Length: 111
Image 1 (tube, helix red, strand yellow):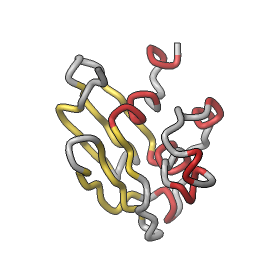
Image 2 (cartoon, helix red, strand yellow; image 1 turned 45 degrees about the vertical axis):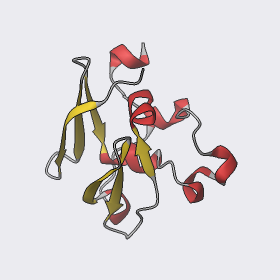
Image 3 (tube, rainbow, N blue to C red; image 1 turned 180 degrees about the vertical axis):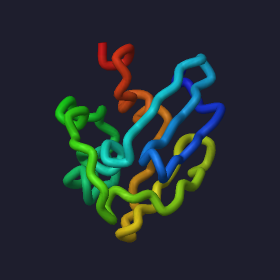
Image 4 (spheres, helix red, strand yellow; image 1 turned 135 degrees about the vertical axis):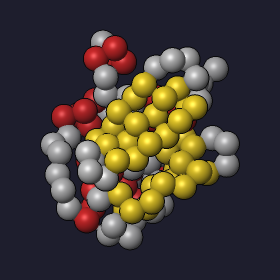
């Protein structure tokens, strides 16, 4: 069963999104990583590529500060994920809990 977040915090100052999971784990994502990993059909190269696990090269994404990586808003999407609205207007991706947990960049998860 996929863990679910108990708390979500977006820090524009740190440019990070933090999720506390119900299994006690904490994931901290840079906005750059989240944008690079956008799960929408446009960013993933079509509907056939949606739902796949994050590609390993995403974890080498450099931290940038552009309108593409500036978070404007985070919105709950049902009980299964979040949508992120970026300052450049992009808001098509639904980051479900499974995908976000697989995207966790910490040493424990990347092990």
